[in-house]
Image (tube, rainbow, N blue to C red; front, side, top):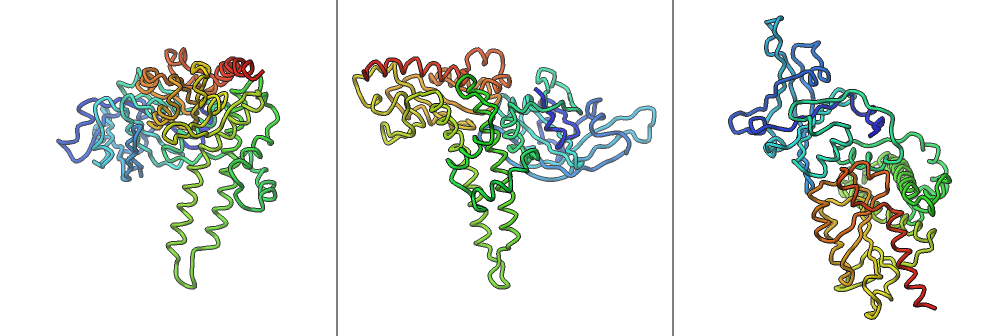
Length: 413
């Protein structure tokens, strides 16, 4: 993968799969790791003892635990110049207590000279994503391996990179779209528009797409652009509100600040999913595909899309094999299981996501549950060869639905 974005945030990354001894903290109040060439290259050997401010993260596909502290890199044989022995230790935290043998330990040196230590659960999606993000081969991670240089970025999968960075607490920046700020402020009167309006605005800023012939690249470009524009507008409006302050007279209005903070978080959460649905709808219209968006099915479930429409779905004489359901989730985690009960008549369901490098454990379960994963084609490269043989591209999905639509059109004559 091309990962030039990372040069702005990291000067180097090392990783190792933890052994039983390294993961066991019961015998000591601190962890200590022996340094090797990869560690020396990234952490340096010019100073005999060095402390780094650090953020610790434990991550699996269900939750993240964080802590902060110091990590110390030192030469334990400083007085023996002929035989140096570098070691690295860090204190026991709630993060290190979670470590198990087989988990992957990523030590990321940031450009501000602080460290980010991530323990990623074995065989989790986030573990896969981090190996892919940093372009490291997990098969070699029985010892510390590292990287200090990152090549130029692949704009097609910018959204996938951004999602992973944000999971590990890195705010992605894209200065190439700053010229859009003033036009957006004028267009939306200095406020946030509805998600549908904003999605349409983002699409209109891109002209080099072909939603009919190349829906995969088109969808990614639309999503990338909207995400970048949203962050640009959000940053400006949040700064403006903070500058106004949160005071009533001379007193700080804590409730107003909390309410504002929650509104920011809620807007981010609701917009992400709706944004993807908006762009999928735009593709469907361009492809002249008949569909129903968020109709009500059994037990008041609301699948994202039913094809050809909800009327055909409710018609018990309409063949089930000619029906299709599509869920849309920008990220999966365990939420993909929600779509399994959203359209009981349709046994084989589809889910379109932008999630990169989902673990084989998860995709195997999807296969067993008869859920077909659909991803924009450029994101397929983040998956294993075995997984890629099963994945659908957006174009493959569209073609399958259009083929089924022929039956619907014959019935309408």
